[in-house]
Image (tube, rainbow, N blue to C red; front, side):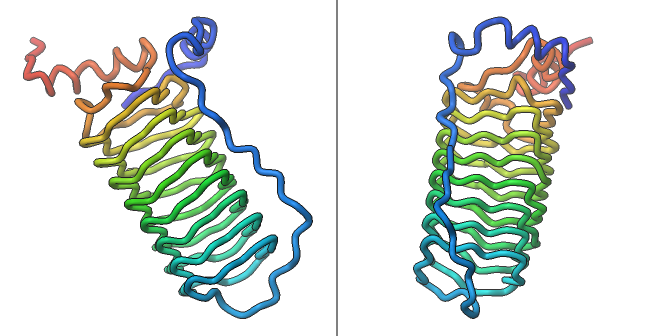
Length: 234
């Protein structure tokens, strides 16, 4: 487990981030005036445009393949919600909560996820492009074989996230806690881990090629790296 202090992070900020890793193209969502959703439950392959879903219980709803464009989901319960292959574009998910939400093979583009409280979210095979995950806590996030491009995890807590077999390009972990992360078989390019406040890697230390870490993190990762290379330190 790596804990990088504020002094180390300041030193890295001063060393020229742009010269060592390509900057993430952050999502900047600007929602139009929204109409409150007053319909019933979600529908498979439903088409939702310019709507606000606020304080709703969407637990167990089936929205497989649904399309959300210029929408906001605020403080909604998403327990066991079926949103596999759903598409979220230019949208905000704020204060959503739930266990077992199914977002397998979903597509998120220009999306902000703010202060989410989720557990066991299934996002294997999903595609995330220009996504910001800010605040909140997500336990057992399954991103196996997902594709992440221009994604920022900021000031959030990720407990045992599973990135196994995923492709990460221009992904940044800023003031973010990672505990028990699985990076097995991941392909990385310009992945910035330097400002993770806590970095715990359970598997996949050998797959960090393409990532950037701080000197303090390298020191703490040394035992795991040595074990991976078969080096005994006596």
